[in-house]
Image (tube, rainbow, N blue to C red):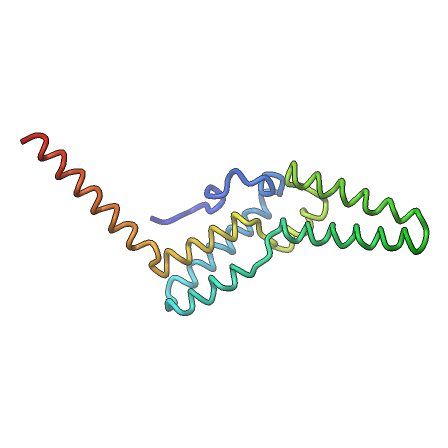
Length: 159
């Protein structure tokens, strides 16, 4: 089966829904190119790529770290210096809440432009790599065994 549109596999992603289509398309094209590149590689090389994917930060993690860092800086500056800095933790909390509810914050849009992917996009590539490595071959053979068993059971009922 050839997948023509990787975006179809991650349709219900809130972040993707708020990201301009051309950015999503660029990320999808890059993911497809990576999967095609690894299609001819050894199991060892594919395993190394899966390890990289396991360590890749998704956009949610990046946004959380960024907002937490700004909030901490604002709180420290507010306590040590001018009280006006205490507005920064409030603003970052609003952005974090906005991201959690709607999947969008101004910083998320910037990260998407740099190619930072969502957890679903990373997982999609990870499962594609596992498929290339053959991790699911046994599952398909089990499914065919189950289908043969069902067929045999149906034939025995008709006898």
